Amino acid sequence: MNWDQIKGKWMQFKGQAKEQWGDLTDDDLDRIEGNRDQLAGRIQERYGIAKEEAERQIDDWSRSLT
Image (cartoon, one colour):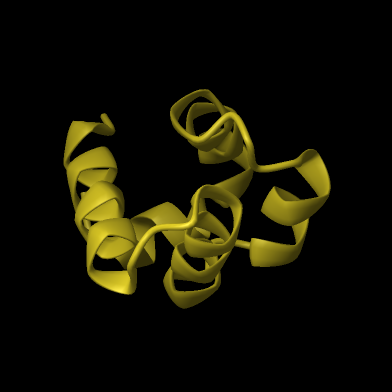
């Protein structure tokens, strides 16, 4: 699934993102509003990982969505 589709259906995918990254708060997910860069930044911040690792996790997660 491409990121434009994810962004357009963010309300539907927020729950799956919360399952994947449990440290993200509902407020985090509301503020992200499907923005990939903001999601990567929040993941980096919450998990203390590098940007490249956050991007890899997002890529893996987005490929798993149906």
